[in-house]
Length: 150
Image (cartoon, rainbow, N blue to C red):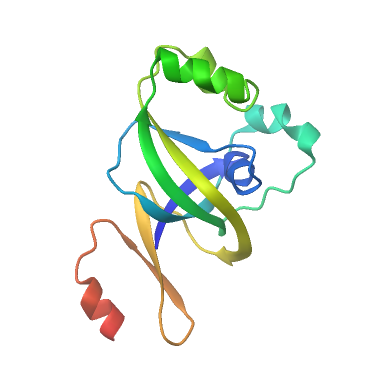
């Protein structure tokens, strides 16, 4: 399954349903199931802003799954939509009006039992194989059939 790595507190905010858009400078045509992975990085300013939520912020694990439904260019009208949703959660995007990029709309979030794993840049693949062990592959998938068969 595809995975996206986010810094904390963003990964937990997605997993808990407070944040439904994740922002990137690149777009993706991928739509479908996606795991939410928390990397080891922390946005300390954002963590202070959301401390009132009293959440736990694990690192180095997959902690939720959802559906990547859309990839939306971030423009002024989209920023207005975000300001009505939650100006505190989306403060960075609302404040930095010169930022150009995309909002990945992630829906139907479900928390899962954490799966320890190292993150990667971009979208990456995480596979469960027959003996219940796991491995990950960076996109593009190369020789993935051989890996699954062995």
